[in-house]
Image 1 (cartoon, rainbow, N blue to C red):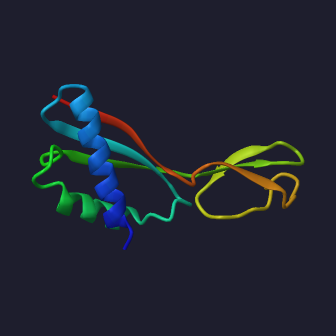
Image 2: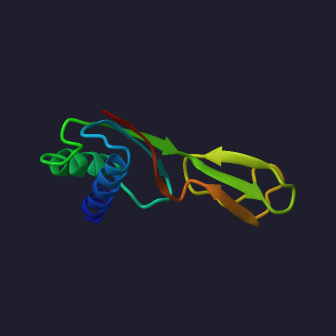
Length: 113
């Protein structure tokens, strides 16, 4: 389960940001996770809750915002978002699609004190 290593990297990043801002506590961690990121959000939540203890994020709330898959058609330039992987344009039915968003995980914000 790679969610554990993702959480470890996230906690390290949080600690670095807190140190740069002279913060001693992180109260909230907000992430955006794309549906095509390969990350299971419920497993990520479990991993965060397990590994945050004893870190600067020990009492932090973990907010996960799911990012739908955002696509753009190469033919008609239509852009839209979907919840599942469908690489066929809903307007012109072309199979030439570009992924604009929804493949990554981002740390969006921290609330620190």
